[in-house]
Image (tube, rainbow, N blue to C red; front, side, top):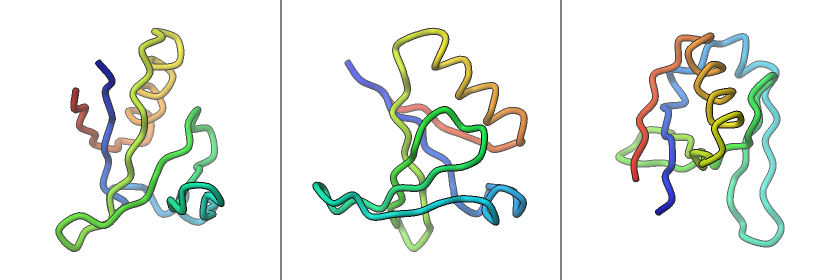
Length: 82
């Protein structure tokens, strides 16, 4: 079973959005975003008129904990769906 973590773009602090990098994946056409210090790239999508970022939620403890610590450090609310 795979899980994904979701955050709202509006919850990302301005300091992070200012230094973020976005691009369109040439294979899938997905909009990808990266933030300074975040261990994973996220996929941007619009859901119910709000911009949402989806991250794969790692099975490996070290990478998963790094992602959770990064989200908590910046006070970003997140939801994990399995």
